[in-house]
Image (cartoon, rainbow, N blue to C red; front, side, top):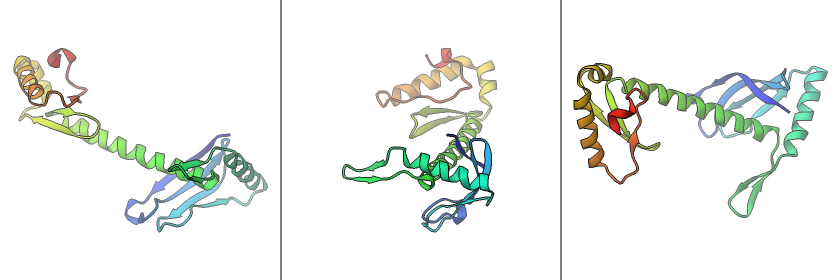
Length: 172
């Protein structure tokens, strides 16, 4: 069974305890209702479009979700899966994917004039006054020297060059 959210709109400024959002509910390729949460910590509201087919699809999806394994919260606590929890998982993934995409876009912009050196949690920068493309063209040995010095300074921390716009031969 394929359960999706389309026309997803997230309202971060209204999200207090839960994600504030609205979305069309699509089950097996058919728009059959909607899901929304006001962001105050309450349950996600899942409603059909009031058509017989929509109501039946939501009923089937609810039964399908109830057959899925529960969440394990700690060693002694479990939360049963249902359609609402399934949708909340989809929303969490959509919000996090969007945040990751925005972070990646921001980092790619920084990479135009900086060397980013670090891991998935933190990074340091080597900033230049001219674009890296120009440095790579005119001063590749100088860039290599700067990167080598920076790498030695942070040796043993498990960091790597994060830039995708610097050829490997420069930093290896």
